[in-house]
Length: 401
Image (cartoon, rainbow, N blue to C red; front, side, top):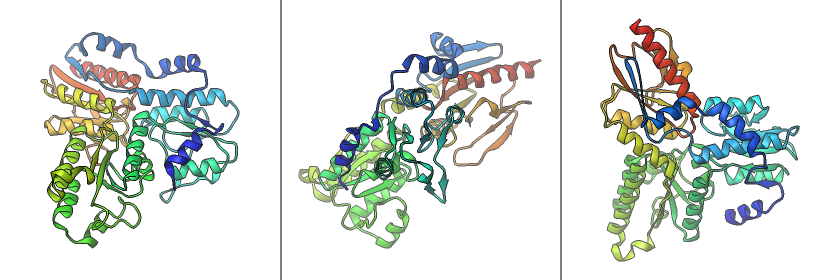
């Protein structure tokens, strides 16, 4: 399939909408009420610091809603304003935040159900309005919706679209796209759908396995089993790793993406020689600015004297999870929650350890004066962060009393 030609054709269709519908003013009021916070703005204005009694809050200097997320949510809200009586669907969560997605459900936006790992688009009728989320949607989904005659509202983050353009460049030169990402993540599913040949590596360890195979060969059957869910159909590691290009899921750890790119550059240089590198390796900068800024701010924050770190964001949010990893690497006690409701009475917190299941920790706030670092993922509204800080302040005051 000529994915570039299809996308161009879709974008020229009268049923395709990439921008808002002129309801910015109405939506701005809703966004401000539901998501913005005067307390958080006050903390920003006070050098990202708040002192109340025995508690000092230190906010990361970049956190929360990024431009791409805010844009996607605003367009989704405008869609309901513009189509007040039509059936509206969304192919996935608009972003990885439970409160934002619930607001859309309250507006009677339907979420496409997943049955046995497959989305059930049978509920979508001709003429229905379908929103593509900030992560994007696969080419196959877009084609299906276009064939149904749906009105498509595309809120895909421009940074994600930039990665798609990179994959198209790989395909044009017959390079295999090596994508740093999670093969199940909606964004990576969408990105890989634009590729001809692709291989998805989760981390540097998997990348090193692939690099070793390129340089020294190995057990082909073992390779195919290892990446059975993370490669294109008919992938042959003995043929398809001759020329590779690097792409990434925009929410992955910046440093790891950079290290993976450097690893494959050195690998292809060793395999084919420096003079032939450009015939076997392509790399473009596809690291999202917002992701980079939040990770850099977190790296700076954990260098301060903190007693613990609170990381706020959806449990299925990749960029939030990577913020938590930074605290863990610093051996700093960290608690990942998706809402203030996880902060429970009696100095307890229900949180998700990295790679683990939800658990409740008792006495998570230490006695005496404490400094709490706080950050949030790119899909987390300031209002959610405010609610969490309020609970900490209230709980700590109750403990002292």
